[in-house]
Image (cartoon, rainbow, N blue to C red):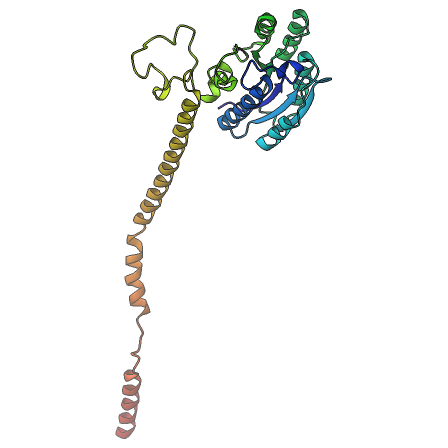
Length: 301
């Protein structure tokens, strides 16, 4: 899996108070942040995630790059809803945070929630996108709440920052489903969660075919949590089987090595038995006989 350093930018502007997403735009982001963190760190344990906000008076770093979800959660709880969205400045600050990451082998990624009108014009966003591309920073946008106004600007940004299809735009309209549930089916988490994302016409193909061509026979669009849980369970089982296979191979090698040396100790043992046999019996008969022979020799003399 890809080793990444990811900065998540949440939109805590006044627009995030709206309740058109369950339970509100901001709370929907909180749930989605938890999902993104889990997906990134489970895909590669050495990946790290940071958190920023871009509302209020300006962007604020809430948690530096970390693998500890407690720090991310603490940053979310300390976030206050106020002000307006500062998207361009937030992306620039996130880029600086990624530049100073400790592990330089980590790929750089920014995931930004955009749930309020974008103040920047399209030209300035395109310039920023080209700068991010030059710095090899991939950017994903989660566009919700103000899709009609923001989509064209975000599409232009993605078109200029994209390199080898490493950046994505996910537009999620309001509806009965949770924002995090809809996010699982997008390319932003598609690679990390192991669930492919079909095109618009793929959902109806093979409708009565049972599994429908989906992993584990579960449509991630209908039950993303179950599909993710099944995939994680499969990965754990594969890891367990791999460990058992390695342990079995090591035991077989050790047994084969012991068997190849097994005949040598027997021959040596026989030799040792002969060499370790006492020259004189323990009862001292030979010594007594020798003394008797000496006495007879003296009498004869």
